[in-house]
Image 1: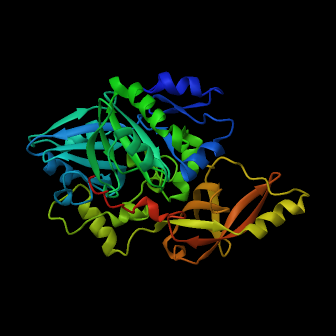
Image 2: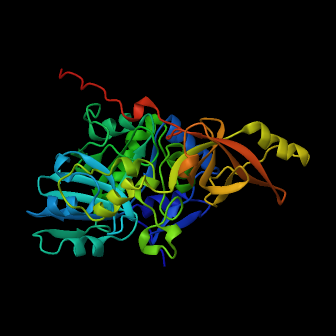
Image 3: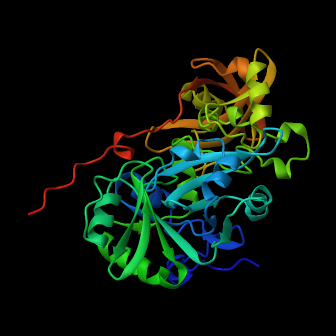
Length: 406
């Protein structure tokens, strides 16, 4: 049975339509407002509060903490400074992705590790022979994502300190009133945003403080439906939708190399001196020319889509929510992959999709046919391979110099 997160005493009364979904055993709001588009607009135009507590969270500490992190992830942990965060994947011995997540270096010998799937057993298996402690703090630590162009204003009002100097994927400890928190400049919306980590016992107090601080900035809670659209626009992948963990793969096609998953491939560091799990398999894959599939962005042509509806006497009717249903893709009459996540982008005014396609069809500008169904009649419309992310505002990564002391 799913249970509420530590923020449930505040999120439950706001979810008047009782639109919940299950996320790792927790209740996650699909939407709070009458339409999730209102919440999406808060993410893109003001500020939104998103409960991301269901993420699995682990504290890795001890003299060999860095050795464990370096042994597991594909990036070079020795280059991760205190106060910085990595987005990374970790693989099995065959080079297939087990999961992706973030690793934040809190202190010289302490890391906070987040994952979409349970990873405690995997970490402990790889920690054999090392002097390291791995603590599952998934229930003890809660997290709120404060996302949107005004998120920095909200955070500064709540903490009474400047955050303009915190770089993208940076983190530091702070206080919201009397509440100790850890703040990372991370998120899952592709916009300016932060994630605030707090002891679950003080989660409700944190929610109230951020709502008060954000009242002048149009802050509102946002659910999973709005987040899904934002993360697709940002080109961010979702486990069990855009890829599967090798631990759940039933056939080879359901296992993915980091090099098949866009940015995860760029975060495989063969220069690191450590023999990380899956390294040899990934090196063999690269010597063979890379994997047979690639993650790409697709922009669908509007005019052909409009014509499909017009032929039925209809105006184009697109679902306001993102689709996670796989859609076949074709080139020269043969299937060459599938679109995994598809959405109408309210900001870009386009239909966009994340897609897994054959490597020879992944070049920017390649034309691909997308299956589209109108009134139970399957047809095809054209799309173009474009660069990811679809939406990439400068505010996401820009910094603002700290104001001089009075």
